[in-house]
Image (cartoon, rainbow, N blue to C red; front, side, top):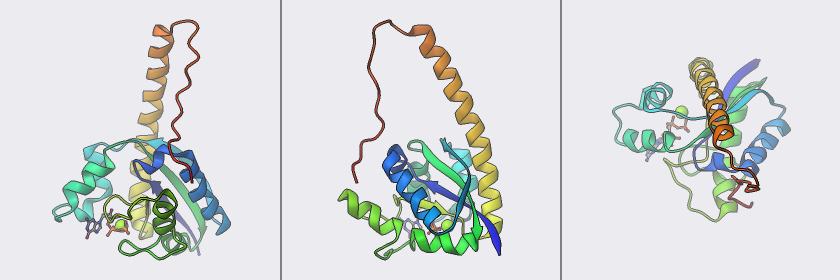
Length: 173
Ligand code: GDP
Ligand code: MG
């Protein structure tokens, strides 16, 4: 059965193109097709919509702080049994197994595996995917508008002769 899922590289990890590319590579190796993708930035309102089922739980404040702490990277992914196939690729919430993204990426980075500050999200049902993709598409539009505004501002204040290139990639795998 062909399904659509939503995959999101969470803040901190989304600062690395190497990590994003590694997750995309694993998705594609499993026969998944990336239909749309963008950096996004969750605010408190959209974080609470995305994680509505967890509002009121003890870890929710920490989860919301994490999701809103920096930019993330969202993807709409399609494929045969996409929901389950991708959940298996990403690994379970607690004690993910070796060979999954939630295990392998922290291990490669030499950092501790964390329950709240984990690497990636993926939808747990078609219904969740639909809701999460709706939020992603709103955020994608806002992120793109924000980038356009920033470019306009930078162009206004640009000093000649500057050859400083900001590099986002602060991880080496
Ligand atoms: P997922 O679908 O595997 O991401 O897990 P859930 O939907 O149950 O939880 C959403 C996110 O909340 C997880 O990815 C974790 O970041 C965090 N989380 C879930 N359960 C716990 C928990 O028991 N403790 C803490 N600290 N964080 C949790
Ligand atoms: Mg979930």
